[in-house]
Length: 93
Image (cartoon, rainbow, N blue to C red; front, side):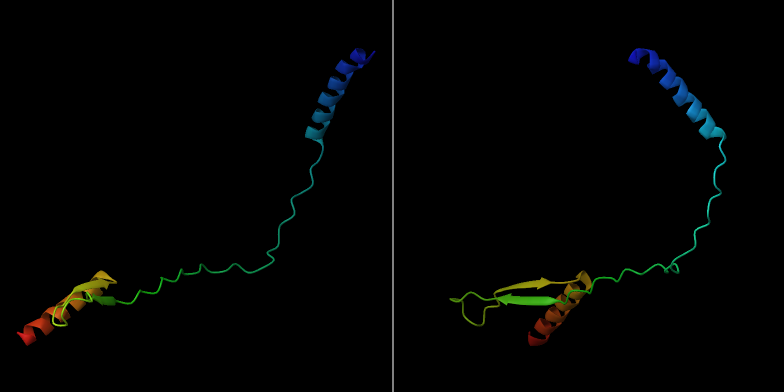
């Protein structure tokens, strides 16, 4: 008996879809802004890292020996520090 009602259910489903197609739809309601639009925010540039100059001296080396130097930072700052060290060395010689 259930198989006899199956085609009727499909027919009713199709009829329901057809009626929904012709049914009046409610008009869209315009949305009201709940807040004012924000202007685009600028992304702050990360703070420039300071120039680091590290002098590494071996414990057994005499004090007159320069040892090794590690200079880190922005390329312009590193170049300026190297120029300053070269000028300082030229004044001693």
